[in-house]
Image (tube, rainbow, N blue to C red; front, side):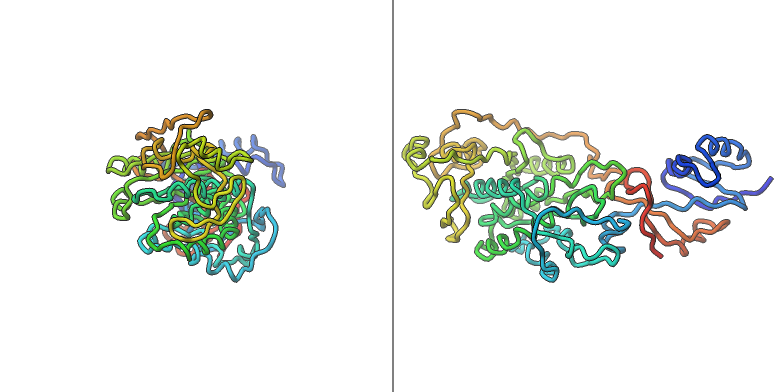
Length: 460
């Protein structure tokens, strides 16, 4: 009987059989079918299986290549943003062009103005345009400004929320957790009073699970607004943490896994920033914090930082034709903010003496219900008269509590944000230790944390 040596050890049990099974799904040049392959495998009585994680080959066969998982971002930063795209291009809607040279300063332009907030910013996404790829062209050259009606509404809603902080007590921070482009736009609406702290911790990819190229393009589109607001905004403005709700996108095993966890400050860190209350903005009031934020929110509340969830959809347009008389009827004795024109956007002086686009979007679509925001959430006293809306109003039912998620215990799910890569260079009879130095990596298909069923571009 021939002597067999272990030459590779795989850390994913299913890969041992999966590779053979996928190869047998199609007929090769010799007419080998799946059934024939299975019968052939059954006849290999001389093969000894050494545990569920080990693949063995004989002296005259071929070793299965070693498979390992690497962080997707790490691979992109080392090999190129479009690593393994096989020539696939970004699907980039929108019109217009961007000067690629201007994008090299994007990360610096969008960092927090308040130095105390800068350690919590994770603008990794903005760094992606500083590196190009010879295979698919520079990412910077592929980008177009991205602006949609949904983004426009989000920016108006953000401006509506911002107006509520005219004269509001200190200690308030905002967390915007909306789909990337809308999150960027909502933050632009808040940027006259709040210091944007972007928490975008991945890179785009032509086959990415997370469409972060749209978030990047939205930031490019609103860059001028952010820069204008930063120039006028006080340095000590409170933070608005900006998250992409698509970061935990469903992974189907066929895409490049560029998902990531949003890292947020602890309760102690928030208190050091002077924050005692957080307003969490989600698409709807009936939503809850995403799974990777459950432990974070509970840490905040356990340690004395109040949290209230606000639905972005709670900010609605004021009906056309409303005027100051309607405001007085809704809130007797109160006057609308100076310079406000309903149904349009006008420049008006805010508390900081700067000019910004005032929103025609109000909390529950009315003057009185707009200022009812504060007594409703218990975060302060309204500066103007407030009345409960007569219809379409429901008190928030948000009551966060510990729940079991795949991120419980500060753990990241196995394979999350990772890609299976295959080491090349292994030779028959060489142990994994012996061949380690000769191996190069290339992307391969696999289970959770893998991408692409056709493998990827090789590197040597």
